[in-house]
Image (cartoon, rainbow, N blue to C red; front, side, top):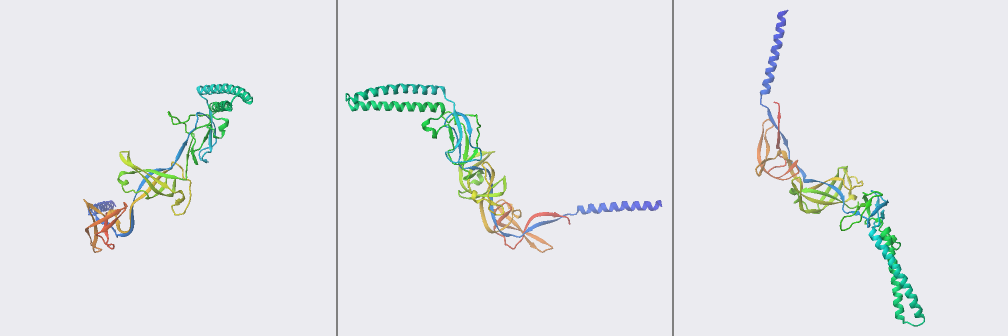
Length: 376
């Protein structure tokens, strides 16, 4: 029994040893090198670039008050549509004490002059009715009275404007009413009731009451690298996609290329602008649709820099570059014994995947691609 056990153990050890030897022998054998093979195809090739940027209204206006004071009412909010001249907010005037004192003094002086002019006019009028003075002297006195009345009315208006920000004579055009200067959508109202505001003057830009823009006239603004800006031409079509609206695309037309570069992260870039046509909104499937674009959306613009149609092409991985020359390896031989002949070719436009072959390759020939290492 012990004898058979020893034979079995020896046989197992022998099998393991033989299996290990065979495995190592197979691993040491050279691998057969095979290649991907491609047949040239006729296709359209486009070279495009992607420009990142954002959506902005072409014209955005900051509405500011005409006087300094405190916000008492806000009649509109962000997102509301307003017409030019429509009231957005109301301002309560905090009068300047120096101006108020001067205005009150002007009123008192106008009252004194008016009373004196009235007395003089009554005296001259009595003499004129008795034909003791000339008509010319009478008219001069009456003119003086008119001027005194006008000065009194003007001084009253000036006092009301300084004190209240509005007078009875110009209530419809009150400077306490902050009105929109254009028709459009209110993008932002950065103030609240009770905030102090100041008007624009020589020393400051004034307080912005609201930002208003025409959202029917939008542009894409972005930057393109200096290596590609030379291929752009005003009027080129662009396709705008927005990160927040993945399934939407917008047609646009390039309308501005900056003549001066700006440095960004060590690279020179040029600003570009493109007019967007919201009415030409497209879904990915081609179905027309409409979504409300918002100011500040991040967006990408695809610009086709060059294109060719129905040209002979191969995958770019099948091209071998050697200095200024390019080559392909053309399949030959038999199915059992393949050969590859190195042949110079003239290439054209590339989209990064496929490349145009202008000369040196036939449509029915097959070319070698990257190699694949397989077990024999």
